[in-house]
Length: 189
Image (cartoon, rainbow, N blue to C red):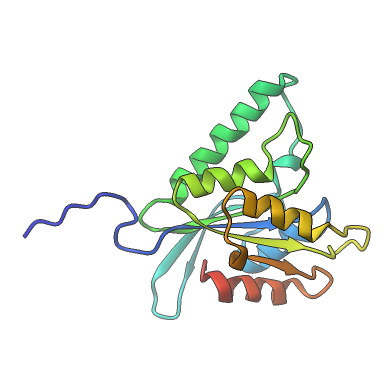
């Protein structure tokens, strides 16, 4: 009997998109480094880990939020289009058979005209059939970084992220504790 595969993810659960949301210097990359074991706060690439049964899990990681990168192109539409295209390429890679998903740092700025927004990122992930999780750092590691959680949650729900998959984390506690919370809920790695 011949088995037809319709997708690279046919033999395992839907890929996961995990957004760690916070202002600049709020602890996003520290938590992502604790979660994935990536090498630096500027890391962008693939991380491979082995579970207790010896199965390899690959995760695509964007440790610094796209909104923190410098703008090389002053053309608003071109910059946003390039960022969207780059993000869609990451999503496509993270849908591969050996991949468990994508973990990304995100700044929640709502007034970005030149950059990819939090809403666009989650909307694209949902469009690509990712199971989405959002972790809001409030308070952030930097005590000046307190977000309006209710507003961010409303914005995420408005694009289709399930309320049960949105959590607020206290980034003032050890990053490894927050990473464990994410790992236990998502089983990303």
